[in-house]
Image (cartoon, one colour):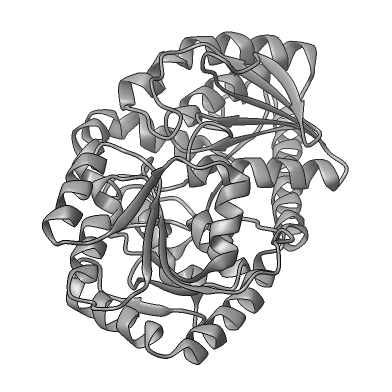
Length: 386
């Protein structure tokens, strides 16, 4: 198949949704398909390049940070994406369009699909769904609700990696949503000894719950290292909070992939205390490195870790502190959870997930062709019956 993938973020821009889009696109190429990715650009990034066999086309827009974007910034690249998308669809007839995120890229997918008669599939990632990130997008989702529903209702198929996000979608739109986990292939990491280190990797925004992690560390009373990788608007507040509690926390900001891999490999414990998550890639990365994972129940995080991690209520610093204390005080238990996490990650191998995605695309194409055949057979006008 020839596939056009649309994503408002694609590495090195963006977070987990961008990483999921990249892993999936490259896996489709390895399976023998042609994949073009149309995404947002930034100064310093090539407008066109091939990465992992995927042809990446970046359109201009306004974006200040690689790890974070506002609704206005995401909207700024839509005209360029529409323009470039039309040219690509005319020059390279695609079998299917795959939009990562319902909005903003789903709007482009629907327009291109109608103009060029190509079915489109939408994958939701979280912030593109009402109720997932209400502190940032509640008003915006109310304003665009009709268009948001139309994108989903006109799609050939809708997917979500988690039951959590599927439930949010179906509160607001009467559509079928197929569960399809994010694909992930564990990299080969250096064999290093685990250190008593509590590691968190996240955008520093309220939803990620890092403030609750800082509070949990406050009375932990251990000699473990505390490391937070990632950046965002809450960083200054979080650093001040740690200082006020007398904590020595290393805030690393954005780190490159090699350094992040070394941190995963050498850390005994990984924490993601988010209030809402879909299917976070950082959990898969930490699990593949054998970290004992502590994360939140009643979110997509619980669906990722299964029984291979400890679950605590979101926002409960005391429960988080007790879970961390139990692992730091019992290295053998932490190691056993890390081994279970490695085994769990194998369930999300790209070959497995890609086979399911291919089957979904084939079903969508078959339904589209069947609809066209029925349309061609129908009479231009029904005779009047008197």
